[in-house]
Image (cartoon, rainbow, N blue to C red):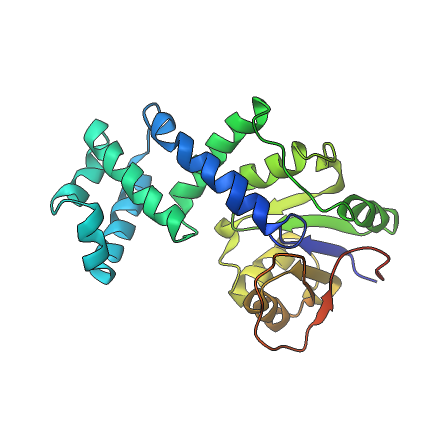
Length: 247
């Protein structure tokens, strides 16, 4: 029997449509207002500047349509003009669905505002709570690993239409532990859980994540939920849901 279940969120426990049709548009709509009072530290500004310069070199034609030639140089100033450049750049990162730390942090703050004001309720697949509860009854701990910040992960389960689901989870991991398509990330998680990788089962909807977890020694199940992105051919176990599944 496994000691730990590790869950992805988007396309696994929550519909992809919730993330892309509710969370991302809400963050984009409120980004400008939130940036007016948000202060990035020097390290974050340097991260943003470095990412911007990398994109600028790789996508010069596209960037020339969004930014004036000198605008990227304003980011490190952390004043009103730089925040406007950051807003425009973050809009671009949201559009291309970039998993970028400083953006994820501010998105989490915006979503927190939305959840607490009842403007947002997260959608969790109805079969999830029963599966989590059954796992706990069998002595299995449930954990989350998502590209969204830990704060954003907690909010999704706290403010769900099915109620507050936080008690079902023991811990949360984001990309501070490592990228989701990197073997080392899963080894880091098994080390944090003080368990052999073979004692952990990972649930995801992305084959490349499954491959990295398997390489680390995890057992893996791929979820094929409605609206999920078709995956390349693979040999992993596939579930359409969590109903009546073996532990």
